[in-house]
Length: 122
Image (cartoon, rainbow, N blue to C red; front, side, top):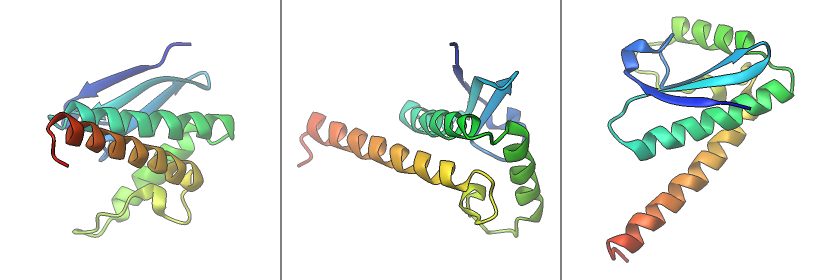
């Protein structure tokens, strides 16, 4: 198994997203995360994408189905709307997205604890 997580300029994303996953022959191969100038943010997005994509693949939800939904969602996006495509009830990967988000939030909380302890911010 080899899964590469790479930080890239946001302008190089395939569509309007900060995290993207790519498969080859049904296998997860690459996760691309927009450079946000913070390695913790990049890790959190990469972790989210890893979990979401792995569950999608295991459950038969293809990259093409996710991409197609996301691209159409972005085309219909109303200016000012900040909703996540994966929260949409019609998203084919809604359950996987929400679960990945929970893990991402747990990791973010642990990072906050780490900073709080390291800088004696209690």
